[in-house]
Amino acid sequence: MSKDYSFKRLYLPLLIGSMILMVGCGDPIIEIEESNAYHWQKNMNEAEFEKLKNDMSYIEVVETVGGAGKKIKNNEYRWNDEILMTQAYLLKFKNDKLIDKEIIAVKGHSNR
Image 1 (cartoon, rainbow, N blue to C red):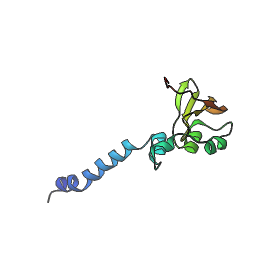
Image 2: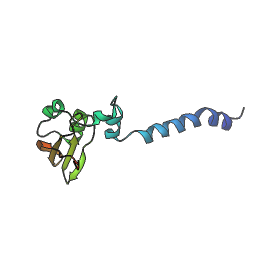
Image 3: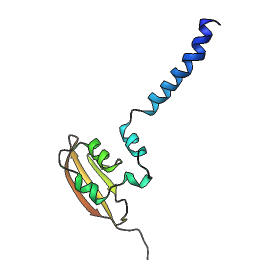
Image 4: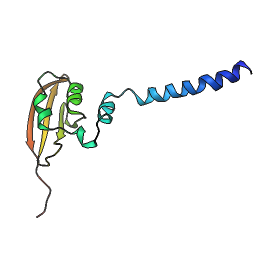
């Protein structure tokens, strides 16, 4: 058996597998959201909201909540409530630090 053949046979699959793993890794937000058992867990609930403290970084908030917020404006993000469709959470950041948080009412789109 030639050395070239054994290299391809033994090391090439390891190299390809390593490259696939490296491509899949790297985005901590995706990793946090994919670690949730259910897709709705990337939203926020009141208990998680209460854990948020000023000066937390955006990624610390994402880790606490279990998912990324929707960017509303520059440095302002919104998370929907996990259960209630009538409220959401608005967080404001400055220099990647939480400076303000509030619970906001969400109005429905019913035409009744």
